[in-house]
Image (cartoon, rainbow over all chains, first blue to last red):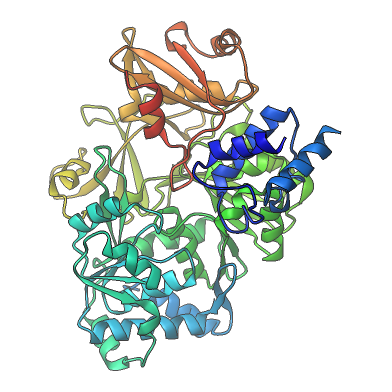
Length: 75
Length: 502
């Protein structure tokens, strides 16, 4: 799953190494409409539905965090 | 009143210790604001920068407002430059504007160096010294209300930015209407979404100064996180919103108000693009206590020239009217030959009155084609602004937006407004945002939408219920997400390049 998330991140913002990044949102690496795009790509790819409650910076600051929330939504 | 600084000074004397402006990390009282702006003004004036055009190149923060009003204290006019603008575009603006100086910070000075600008580049933080009361007083005495207060650059259709020159009189007249129309008083707390280089911010900033209200600049990053955004509004006790529809739609599309209610909000105002009725109805249902209004107008009328306060239910399939002219402003609806359009007949909107800008900076030809003699009388000179927007009155006598004049196309022999097709598309369940483009070379009408994946045939079938056959799109394209420009509006130029170039 990590690889797929990294592929999607590379589509949203090419040229950034997201592998070990833990403050993707807090540092402003991804901004406003990038994030909306990321969420829509993730929900299409993994067939999950994010609600406003999951749409918080903590869930998108790192690849691990994204994996965690997607697994939660899959259950 | 003749000078916008009188709005600041009046509030500073009434509410010296009240917060005027706040960003994420800082806040400033009216008293401090007045002192700091006078300090910056004194430093600029004693450096010989009186009555100058000065670019302000800072992040969206309190300091950018202090810099801007400092320029005005030195009897000059300010030009806010988007901090994210590419160097080439800044250079193109500077070619037209020929600013005498740029106010910025250390990092900004490096960016400005890349534009080839040769004038003085000043670090704002170095300008907080002594106030020179005598000098500022003299400068004020020599100013009149038709002097420019700022120049605001918007993208021109040819790609060369146009700088609209706005005078003190424009801002004073406009902000008087704004505060009156929406009962903006000292209890108002703005949650500011629009950047300072966008005309909508003029209502927030000068509405705040005039009323002695408080303005909170909302960090841009929150517009990706509806729950955090709404929590921020509650934490800052915001009760007044004046946002672009795209920002309101983010909250509605994620059903943000189901998670975080906004019990304090009393006014929800919007402008800048078409507000889809479905998302508006979500807001109205969640905030029954609030006043909702659709505002409409171009930068050339300071911000707005007409508005509609929602006073009846609007069906999801209806378009939201643009209503009636603002007080002290007149909107004329004229045919192509310059005669008044009949009730219900589509015509171009012309605006007359004190909100109308002086013209475009350093662009006499563009000024002449947009700021024209009132077609209804030729007995004395009276420039009116030709908006390029097609409108008509509906059965209630309210004005309705039809489309841009440039969007009116001829297709299969019919005159068609692309905006009408867009309105119809918004009524299709599953479509979140819709843009209709015309590829003239191939005579194709392209509907670009974001939302649920749907069969083109199903989309067309639904549109058939609302549109005559000749208005149906020839192509339907789904995009995962709409591109947005720096102002947060849908980037039509980009879409046209991608989907309607041929």
